[in-house]
Length: 460
Ligand code: ARG
Image (cartoon, rainbow, N blue to C red; front, side):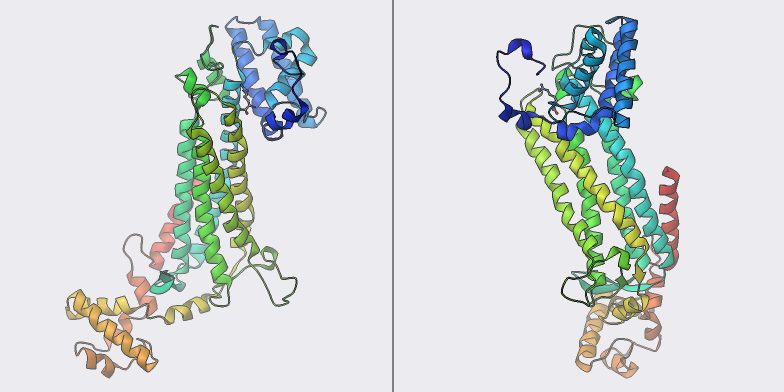
């Protein structure tokens, strides 16, 4: 039986039921719906809009429904239109006429705007420790591999020497920004919309501040139309999730590359790898690939939300029922991806020797060779750059590296060279010398890892 029975002569065509219903998605908000209703009932009682005794009865009934839903004694009717209708209907079943007073001065439009906020507040509270845990794993690995030389890349070409610890900390920085984005979204979402009614507020003397206080919001919405129409917070959380998925996806792409025989910088633990049904030798980084793949659906959730909202006139439109599926999928997918990624990184084996020997090929110390001519011999950088380029070309022709090229060959290109060049281009020294703030020198990496660990562990 529909809520709007009085106005209608007919029951809804059964073919419309599933289409119109949101119960399969919003039943996960039953606790938040009840929490919101309890605060609303308490405020109505305080304001004398309903009797105090009825307010108490309503809250008692809602508390019982919550306990029964939690224990499984009460099942949510999958044919109900949405969670709001189901809980109000159940309350009325249990309390009779008193139950019918709950919806005084309220609409499902402000009710759903509240419930989604409450639900997302909890989802974000669950996400943050997972992101912090991933950051902590990256920092601990960075401490362990602060001095492990590897090639840094641009254009996927070996470029300059860095350390594995430094590389991992780049991801820790991205994830710190993700935490900040969720915090920002939460701040703007911290607005209580009840009292907006269907769209035009209400004539009842509500104390909206009291409802906000009971529900732990620091502000109330200031315009009733905006109160029921605002879904910015869904888009913001979908964006924060999307950005985090970009970071996870980039890290996973590198994991996939590093696991290949072409790199062999790392190997994933058997527990976080898969085999092939036909090729007995295979060990595949499926989980990393799947995380990379799942980023697409999260971006889709964000795009769906923005597109759903962009043409809507004020105030509530049923289109907005699509918000929950999208934003819940975004946060669920992010959580789903973080869950295996954290132990996968924790248990990986790192092949420092392979990184070191990859770093020894590709002339990644060429910049340091040029810098030696500048610092030790006073050459202008452009000249030093050109001389080093010639030396690299010479090495390629002779099948040598800058380390193995004899001093006479250096001197034939530029007489300023002396034996000091070999020290200047030693990869360990090249890395140690990059002490500039933010650079890969092992002491920097250790200090940065400790700083970031302090940030995430301080936040817990
Ligand atoms: N199920 C609806 C939603 O998720 C609740 C609000 C319905 N309001 C309405 N006027 N039909 O958006």
